[in-house]
Image (cartoon, rainbow, N blue to C red; front, side, top):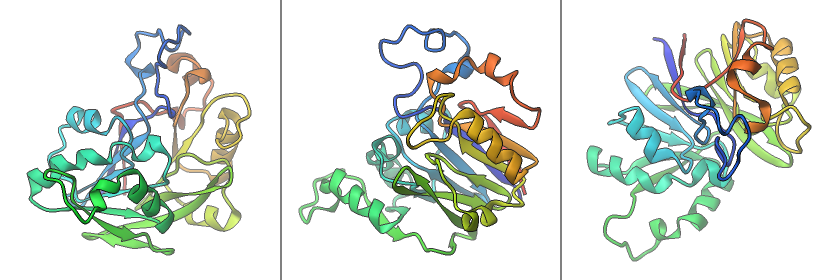
Amino acid sequence: MAVKLTFLGTGTSQGVPLIGCECKVCQSTDVKDKRLRTSVLIKHNNNTFVIDTGPDFRQQMLREKVKDLNAVIFTHEHKDHIAGLDDVRAFNFLLNKPMDVYATERVQNAIKKEFSYIFSDEKYPGIPKINLHTIAADKFTIDGTTFIPIEVMHHKMPVKGFRVGSITYITDANFISAEEKEKIKGSEIIIINALRREEHISHYTFKQAIDLMFELEPKKAYFTHISHQLGLHKEVTKELPEWIELAYDGLTVEAY
């Protein structure tokens, strides 16, 4: 069965437009230049998953009309990837059960700190109910859907990317080891971060992302976690080979 992935958000930590910014990207009327914080929705085998719950999680769930959610999976603990976790409360009510949350021990510790009230011995009425699960080093399966974790580096921070079927999703990275690249090779679709044109301490640049895709050779590649510094969606698209595209919020892709 096909894996269907929807880009819930494709923007960097501040989103696009930035507050108060008057650049041509932030002032653009093109909907493809409006980017919520980076996250994806995955559907497979009648299951629905979200990778990362950023500050825009509620808005993204409403936009996509999501009413069922099997689990939330986290890449890392930065605020633009975990800040919306409280809004899983809606699914606790809809589904009448705790939300299964998959994360490394490091990310779990950050979640326990940021959302300490969820884990307090004294439970306040209406707080989110979650079940924490530790991501396995090799692979893990949720309700029949298998995720292969791929460890990448976000400067000095380890971040998890995931391969589901023939789709590999990676965000917040600027280095992938040869060993981890082997897990990616053969993917029909690869999604990777391409922050901006200038060098960055913890993200791939536009050129670095292009070079990496030529190395890994997917049939199709999509760039995400994009800042306003990269340029207008319409203009940047003209610089890319046909098989590489800038992702945009709401875009859905599919592979087996």
